[in-house]
Image (cartoon, rainbow, N blue to C red; front, side, top):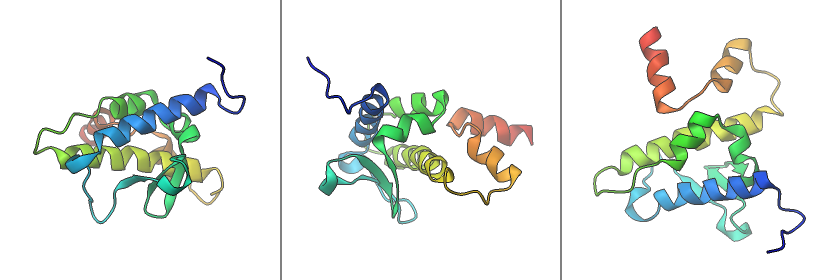
Amino acid sequence: MVNHPNRSSASRAGKELAEAVMTSLSGRAGVRINGQMVQWNTLEGKNRLHIGDSFVPVSALQSNLTEHEVHELESLPSWNGNNEYEISSRALNLVGVAIRRYNHTTDHNLNPDQLDKLNGCNCSECLKKRVTER
């Protein structure tokens, strides 16, 4: 199999991760939370994940997540009839983090506390640890 010269390993990994997320959200598992949900840009070849008007290119998805966050997205549970909120909220949280980190490259107005929060791991386990440490 010949690789296309414009496809990097990061691009392939990001595409695989995005496909895993969107597969988990397919059908009735993907619900809107506060009017928001993770979506593909289907008209442009599924090369971005969107939440509202914000997006992250799938080629930059994995590089804007920590290892814990990637693992959590890869391990989203299968829909069992009553866990759509859990699946959708995890995906919204972590894809939202990737979008914010991706967009941060052009936003230089964040203070040090905001930067720490943005760059800290946002997987469910690390978030629980931070809450209990307070």
